[in-house]
Amino acid sequence: MLDITKIYFFIFGAITMAAAVQGAVKGSMISLAVGGTLAAMILAGGFLLGTKTNPALILALIGAIGIAGKFIPDFFKRGHAIWPAGTLAALSVISILLTIAAFSKK
Image (tube, rainbow, N blue to C red; front, side, top):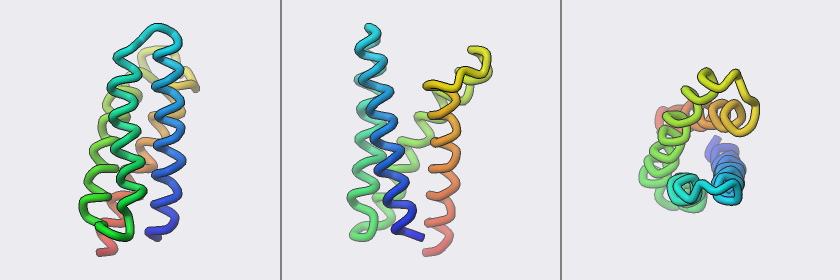
């Protein structure tokens, strides 16, 4: 279970970072700052998972909650846009569920 979670954190973190860079290219430096920070937290959680499980899961969970808090409401407000709101909302919910499952396995 932890291997799947680790791989998922890497994929989710990379997609989140790509969305942050895309936001910056479109002129939103706040997207780069906040999105980059949350992506870094998710990626750090992936790197630490297996060595320091609790801190890794907490880092990734905070990052996923931050992404969910931004993009779930955006998905519903902006006409169910698939990118980035729908994609990041769905990925963050999956990440939160995987993290809770990993916590419960401990």
